[in-house]
Length: 225
Image 1 (spheres, rainbow, N blue to C red):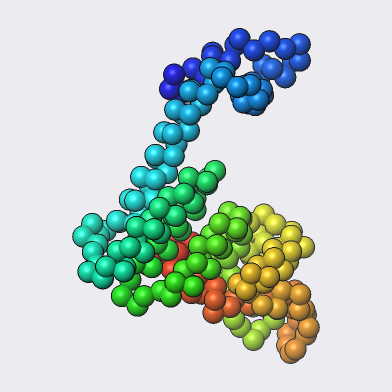
Image 2 (image 1 turned 135 degrees about the horizontal axis):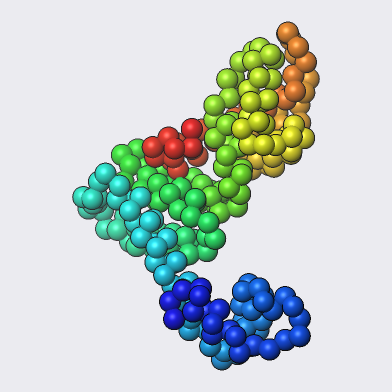
């Protein structure tokens, strides 16, 4: 059995009086509560294919435009092996593939960039990729384009455009800023003090140097921006 249609057929043996059983997801969940059901092998095969595809995507990004990566330092080789294993495990845990390239480019930059990334920064960046939501990555991309202007009018226009691009209300966007500030990726999320100028600021949020470096190491081809 190699696809969801086969899985659905194999689950037809489950009997229930509830109408919800007609839903394949419900059937799968019910089967998972039973030991030794026919779902085990079918689902395992299906998930294995998905995992292999994600792992291959990771490798393709790491080797993109350069298939002769090498290093002579034995310590570096040992770190490479350990971190390759850790990265594959991180990729396996992803339910969406969008983060695969971020993990891959971070890994690539850690081991094959001329100006070596410090291991503690690498660990911090790897943690961030794991905890940030896909929507938060989109917010970060917009933050990286912040005009950093002294003009409240210009900053407000950036803020309005950012909300529109992501389909968020002003309050929802400001909530994301607060969360991201807690991770060191921006400052001023709760500040709307009018320092000078043309109109009252909707937000005084600004990207941090930490954010700029984070994006530099995970966004190999400026695809976020």
